[in-house]
Image (cartoon, rainbow, N blue to C red; front, side, top):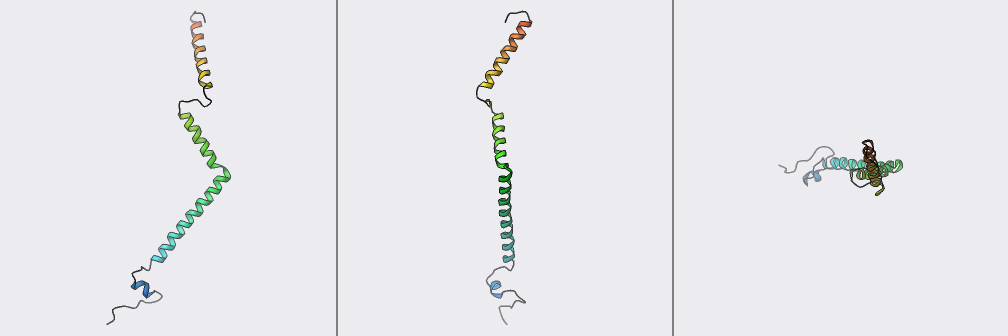
Length: 102
């Protein structure tokens, strides 16, 4: 009685005896193909984003969004000074309508 059984067909008997699964080669090929496809996708995406300047647009929009969310004015102190001037002018006009001098 023979301890090692011969495998039929093209299955490598040595790989089978060493514990290497028959599916290992095909799984590795699939994983490699998926990784390669992902890498190619990322490269093409970067080229398209560079061509359409999407990365720069996203950066500028993020910067604008951050500035709009903060309390500081976009152009330094000029905006706040102008707003304060018009608020004071509005108060003066309201007081003038009530009969008080400017």
